[in-house]
Length: 91
Image (cartoon, rainbow, N blue to C red; front, side, top):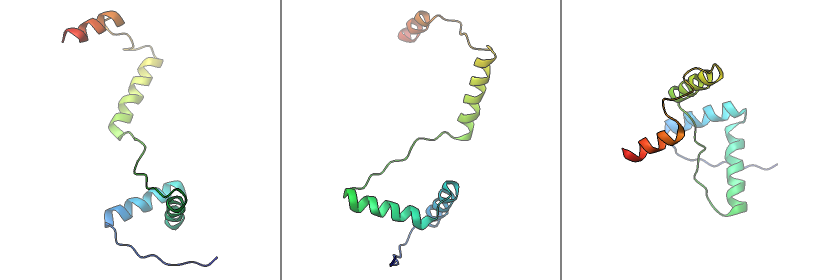
């Protein structure tokens, strides 16, 4: 396969983050960039999106909630669903 070199300038923090994501995915950076370039040529559009991800604090909170639910601890509030809705409507 013939190859060509593309030189780009980017923020050093972005480059570091890209390398980390590539490492997590187990792919070389060049493979990821080539996949995006092929998609751009094929689709003739650029999509800017990222899947939402939870920060560590939120993950810990959700794990604690899941643990409480499994242990039937703190799973019931002081309100029935109707009472809770009524309360929220009043505030």
